[in-house]
Each structure stands twice: as structure tokens, then as C-alpha cells.
Image 1 (cartoon, rainbow, N blue to C red):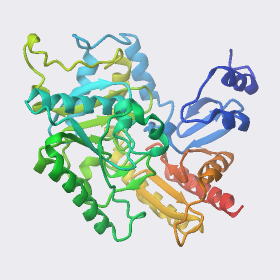
Image 2 (cartoon, one colour; image 1 turned 30 degrees about the vertical axis):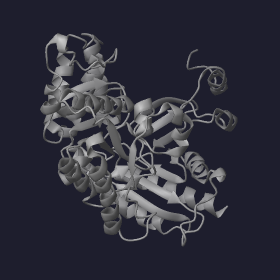
Image 3 (cartoon, rainbow, N blue to C red; image 1 turned 90 degrees about the horizontal axis):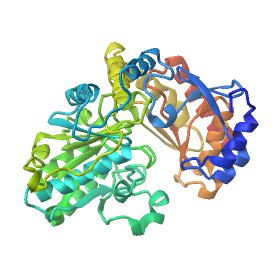
Image 4 (spheres, rainbow, N blue to C red; image 1 turned 120 degrees about the vertical axis):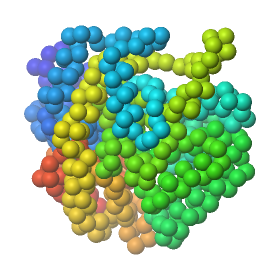
Length: 451
């Protein structure tokens, strides 16, 4: 079907053939789907030519804006040479170059790169490496995992197992393996100061490790902020405390930076805010600037070396993907890293984040805003029925979703996390557009909650 077909034609094809992710299709199709036809900069355009600010970076992946000539050229230039060849038992120039660039910008000690195709698989690979590592060094009892309540690490079986969002994961409980879970230091939900919450939760982690370190292969954490769990931020020093406990108990640390990586928090990686050096680092989303699905798991020489041996020793890491390290994805990832350097993008994010923080101050004072949480250009605005008691709206009202529908009517796209409305714009978003975004959010929240 050509783009000259009507919007209704595409909606009908959607109804017949397409199943959208994390979407209740009945209500979605009844409400009139939004069909995007093109994009430019930080704006998306539908089939009717209407423009929408991309307030969630097309699900947190877009870094440099849409239709960037530098990224487009990287793909078309690579396409003239080769689109993909396997990494199973052979290499390619672009994947090697990108691996070297990634280890150069990653937290210290991360020297090896294992490619995959999504954040969930990057986490899954990290779990498998951690499990297999202890078998190869003679400690097979270390086979369990420690994670945090309310965590989200993806939707494959292993990633769901270390996740902790009941709405997403409970139905699949019989498929998942058991893990240890520690409380997350959410000061908004706990009595006491951030420091007291941090102290109590670190004590809970220490207690689990004191009792079960000999059974735990790895601790899994989203550094600084839980994304899909509601943009819940960590108190300062908590992440460093987690790393210290892992070192004391000889437990590997897996940092899931799929959402927080590539400048989103104001550093290239969130771990760098507290000089944390994990044993395993999962990255995805922004790796290619939002263009192609490439992810990676980084690890240390110590872990990599445990898998070296003769063929007969069966030390090989038996895992892989057909499109691992594909040249098109790696080429655009390299171009994205070039733009980070050329545009001094990390510094720009720090300036933009400070501006957004100022713009959000009046939003935080709205009658039905319980909390505004921010790390860099990751923002969550929690909508509540009663501000004084932080009482939530009944979930079946879908208040967050109604706010986001009003946001769309006002010219911006974002998605809620329950009743937490998310703002996560492309990192290059200008100050004027950021002001428009926060203004739209403020107006939508006021109008929906006053009804």
C-alpha cells in the first residue's frame, strides 16, 4: 500500500494484522491509532501532517533527533560495502572498531564486548555469563541472583526473572526462576530521609549477602534510577554502597544501563556518577542513536579469561544471535559516538537537565502531583488523588494514560508508567522545545485532574 492511501486504510490494516507491544488492542483501536509517517529533529509527523514533539525519545532510544544526516550517511555508506556477516567464528571490521570505542568510554575494567540485539538480551547474556563464570572457576554453588524490588530488566525469561514489577511479571511466574530481592530505597514510599532509606536498604542487601553470598552469582541493578518501575531515583551513595558489598562478598555486579546509558543521566553511563566499575554492563537503546536494534554486554578480562581453554574442555560460552554485531548497526553506533564528541553532548545534557529542573518546579506544586523525579533528562511525574497523603488514584481510572492522551492532543507524544507520566526527550532537544514539553505536561495534568 502506498503512502497515498488514507489514514483509515492503515488503521484497518493495523486492526487486521498488527499486534502492538504493551498495548491493550481493544481500547487502542477504538480510540483511533496514531500512525506516524515521518520524523525530523525532535518531531514526529502523522499521515495527516500533524506534528508531535517526541517526548519519550521513541521509547527512550533516540539521542540525536530523527533523520540526522550524519547517521543516515553512516548506514547508507556501510550498505554499499556489506550489511551483515556473522560473528560466529569470524569477525568484521566495524564490530571490532565499535567494541574498542565502547571499552574506551565504559567504566574502568570493562575490556570485552559481547553483542546482541536488545536490552533484554544484553541482560540475559549478563546473567548467563555470571552463572557460567562461577562454574568455570570451581564455585558452581554460586548460581543465584540478587535484584531489587520494582526492577525492570526486560521481557525475556531470564530478564523477567530478575525483574520485580508484578503487573508485567506475575502471569509468567511458573516460567521464571527464583531470585533474592532486596528493598529499593524509594524515599517517596518509605518513612524517613533519603539517607535513612539508603542505610536501611543497604543493610538489607548486606543481610542477604551475609547469609547467601556462597549461593549468589550476581547482583543486578539499574544504576541511579529505576526506569520502567516509575522513574524512581536512588539516594546519592547507594550505588557505590552496593558495589562495596558485592566486592566484600565476592559477588559479581551487573549494571543494567540499557535505559540510563549514553548520556541520559548527564554522564555517558550512570555508574560514572559514583565511580562504580561493574563486572558486567548491559547496554542498548541509545547505543545506535535510536536507529537500529543493537545491544551489548561488556565484561572484564578476568571473566572473559575463565572461558578460555581447549575445545575439549567445553569452556566456550554457548550463546549467540544471528545478527550479532551486524555492520549496519555498528556503523551507525560509531557515527552516534562521533556526534557525542563533536557536539559535546554530555555537557549539553547537563545544561538542559538543569533547565528542565527549573521548568518542573511549578509542575511539582500542582494539586495532584505527588512527586517529580529526575536524573538528567529522565523525568517521572507521579499523579496522585491526594497530594497531602500521597494517595493514588484508583488504578482502573487510568489517570496517567488519560494525561498522556491529553498530552497527545496538545502536540506531544509520551507514555505513562501507571500514574507516572514520563518525560524523556531526545538529548539534543533545544531549550525552547523543552519549555514547550514541560508546558504541555503541566497543562495536561491540570486539565485531566481538575475533571
